[in-house]
Picture 1 (cartoon, helix red, strand yellow):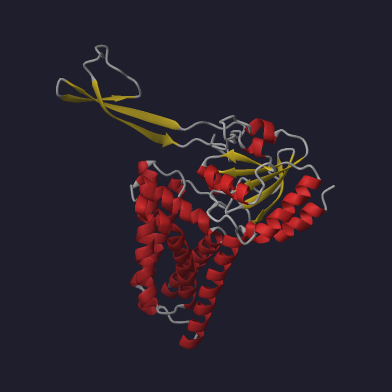
Picture 2 (picture 1 turned 120 degrees about the horizontal axis):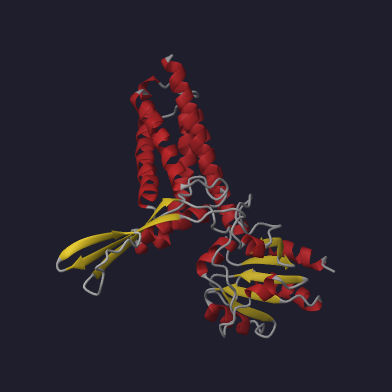
Length: 375
């Protein structure tokens, strides 16, 4: 009976870690941005530049650890590593759930979004299973000889890294983001039908004559006046709603500050949106293909817009390449661009507000073929 329980627990933990790692490997930037969200809450801004490296390493370890558990290789080592990892994950999801400061933990990326409460529950179950495996680690026998296990784990490490390298250049293989091909951007900016807002408890802390007084949900006392001095306000979500639109904070403004979002997304016919969070290189490696695409667009009267949060860099790039009169520059929130463009830059082919196709800079050659076939 004990062997059966160990085998079931080992299989469940190993498969779940591999599955979780593979989903995140499809979009390592997504995990990187989620780490930045935690670091911003904790004021660890100095770690923002390292989150992508942390993300890639954590994903590789998650997949490798899952395979090692299934193989039963070095259980003394990996049981310790898994225990430390799940304690760390449980702390993160518990903090997100109990504080209400982070809505989703990114455990399964954007493909399987879990609420903070669901993620915390999952990690508590995993914690119990991993503690069980940790206690009985001596009873787990390796499936393969040591040399064969090492070869398998090395291959898994290389494949995990290669997959992430590929998607960082070419966009996720499975697009689970709201800006997927076929999506109508304007429709995605609306709240889902029948959705409900968050239920929030607002607590105010006031000082009155040296005494601290707490007021909940605007239930102010009858004698409330200027003698009450506000100390702090705390908003806590007690029940999460579901009225957040899939695409939020997406606004396109000209350099002079005019909002053109509605006009551009309701325009009939084709348009090209090029999302570039920044443009530090005035002569990038993809410039030749880019200029050929722009030539096709000019011949077919397709308007082209570069959407950025670093307008000065983009303007300098266009002037350097004599494109300032050909391509419009629009400003957009950096967070919205990070969601829309997992590669910098990413090109969208839009028709009547619907995303027809999109390409990263590494696939501009494929975009040339598509543009040459537009009539």
